[in-house]
Image (cartoon, rainbow, N blue to C red; front, top):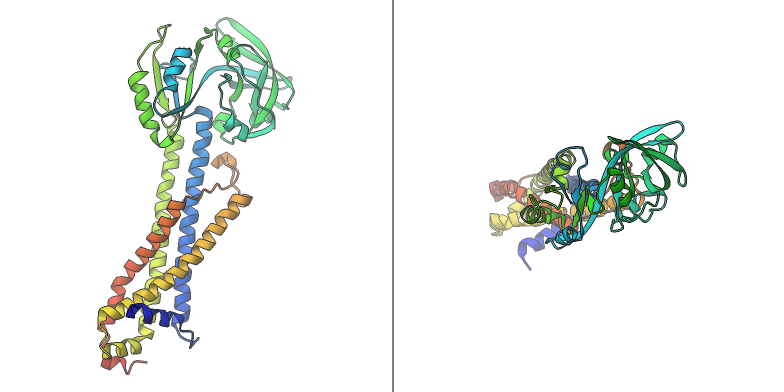
Length: 415
């Protein structure tokens, strides 16, 4: 067995004198590493979970990429673009695209006997992927949306339901105003959803694609555009570039020009805010590594001073400075290892507790989620453990050179 490792194990297991100064120093160093690792793990898992939770909500409403009329993507007005079978086939065959669905928007007013509210009616067809909205349903059910007829069904948000005092099953009149005057339609509320993303919840209700197209006065093969979901969000820019080459700047049968935007380009403020969270994580990581490093350095120095006599004896017996330094570095590895074990138990325990219970709550009006979301990334957790171990050992190399200044003759008389 390696001599340095053998002596380090004996020192680490030595429980003879409980009054030694090194005992509390070792405990403090272990606690410093454990708390530092736990805080780093929780910070990383919370930020990853929060970013995914918010981005998934934004993507749920607008998909990864929107293909629409060039004018439609530059203003709040709704301009039509041809979305016939041939164009849908082209979009579906684009590299990286997983799903394509049409949509048509029209602005209108929901009115009850006592209240009214301006909203955006989003028409969707039978190909609409309801996975996201289904996971955010509060009451009722999601209707089967049609591009062939008007079912008269509508899905509204909890925000709208509260403002207009509406419940599932109730009828509500909708008013649409354009150059041809005022048109009235009556819808039945079949379901209520809540995503806590106010900029969408406050204005978006879902109706049939057929109804939205007819109310806009468009042809049956026209729509506001198409929403594309990609297989891998990390490759969304590559898919967007393919669309720019093969679809953008082409014109449809009616003379309108196709264009596209990614969800990051449509909502730059939200994604810029989410990217800023990474800065906070790096600051926390730096601080926690510094805390772990300082406590380990302090503990090592105390242990070296307390073991001065032993160091002198080892040197007198012929041990080199390098060998003695390795003894205390191995000793430090044992302390760090115990701290990492405790830190993993503490950090992962709190993360799993939050996942299971949602114990820590947030204000959804500010953070878009009602509880702190956490997501465990196994490779990152392993990387944090390895990085903490390596950095903690590296910062101890310089203090360990104190051993070279200890002389055997003087250390024999050291108390």
